[in-house]
Image (cartoon, rainbow, N blue to C red; front, side, top):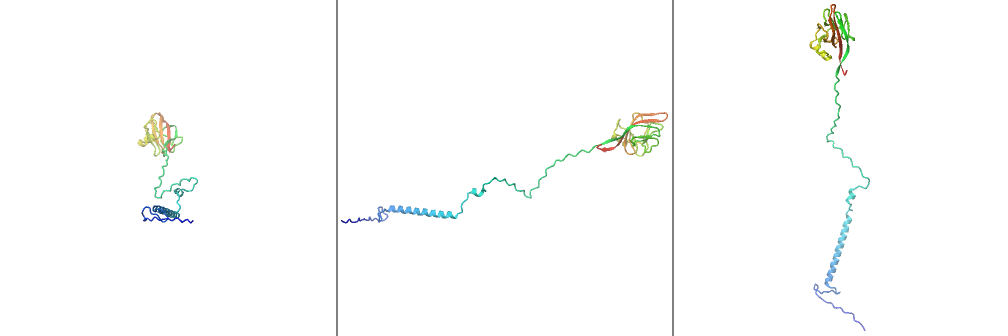
Length: 236
């Protein structure tokens, strides 16, 4: 007995209407879904291929830290600041402290000779510049001489001047000022206790203090305490 093959009947329906089936019997709405899925897959695949190709042409990106940071190693010292431009003003030199100038040395009087001298009579010539001071008759270079009648003192050389002192114990300056202000060639009648000042023939200053002055029947006698100064010397 022969079995006849099944016979399929087509259900013919106008395309686009519900219930349309193809020759294999697949509904029309299923065909649309399959086509849409295939389209999506194709589009996604193309996009992936294009993106892959574009990435191959770009240079590999390097993290910013890899570009700007040097290779690992010991820390380096900071570089010194750049030298100033030549147009910068020159540095102002610091003030160097200087020592105050020393005050000038004060000139001090120097005593040349000090002692006792007796001037007695007209022939007692006395040299105040000698060391020691000398008195003798007719002495060459003498500065003063006595008198034959009175206790007087008289200059015997050019430049010699005598004057009463302005104070009881004058020094060099005071004695010199007294002579320069009112010096004379003679002091008449010297009395005990009188203080006289003199400038000698060599320019020295002398102080003459009369420790004893007397007029005798033979000749007058004048005893003097004499101080003679040399010209002042710096720092003496």
